[in-house]
Image (cartoon, rainbow, N blue to C red):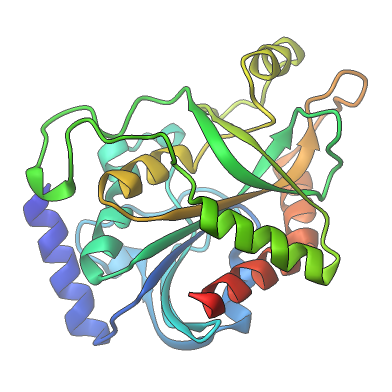
Amino acid sequence: MLEKIKETTSFIRNKTGFEPRAGIILGTGLGRMVNVMEVEVVLEYELIPNFPVSTVEGHSGRLVFGTAGGRKVVVMQGRFHYYEGYSMEEVTFPVRVMKYLGIEHLFVSNASGGMNPAFEIGDLMIINDHINLIPSPLIGKHYEEFGPRFPDMSRPYDPELISKANEIAKKHGIKVHEGCYVGITGPSLETPKEYEYLRIIGGDAVGMSTVPEVIVARQMGLPCFAVSIITDLGIPGKIVEVTIDDVKRAAEKAEPNITLIMSEILSSL
């Protein structure tokens, strides 16, 4: 895998001549952040050696290089999921590539189901911890270049970045929560009893991404910030039938608030 990462990194550097300082992964229905960026270069995933290709509706499948919040960034407009049939190595491959390209922070967004009774559709949840119910991306051969075999996860989400996000949200009157995200495989959405179980074990929101990317980022020493848009509710009495279109509409409506918070955090780095 190490040789593939180096090959992909070299290809991207030669194509873009760009040195990003932050990486951003955009979730379902959240790809429009690039519209407020100063875009310099765009690479389609299918043209990048060793890169997987997004197969999920709402994920464009492009690496976008440019400036956001005054910082040079690389944005994944579309991510990869275990349920697409990719290995965990493939799911997290782009994070390792972004690290080798020079990023110093990782920002992640996702659409998720809310299980905390205080949540409403369209709310933002800043992730302060997670529970991983997906196979670990660190299973398999270990490469010393990536970091420790047994990385510490006592602070998976950077407290300083969380504090900045809360301050920014308060300044702009944006409603935010903090909570624990549960990562599951999907692709089926949760049954009422699964929601109940995930709430009992400590989850506030649930989704099918983010955790693998953060585990790999933390192994490689990258501070992480992640935020969920609550696009549906797994709360007794509020559970209704949900489609991917419902999720996308809810995410797109709340997206400007995520873009604002992330842009201002980037400006403060």
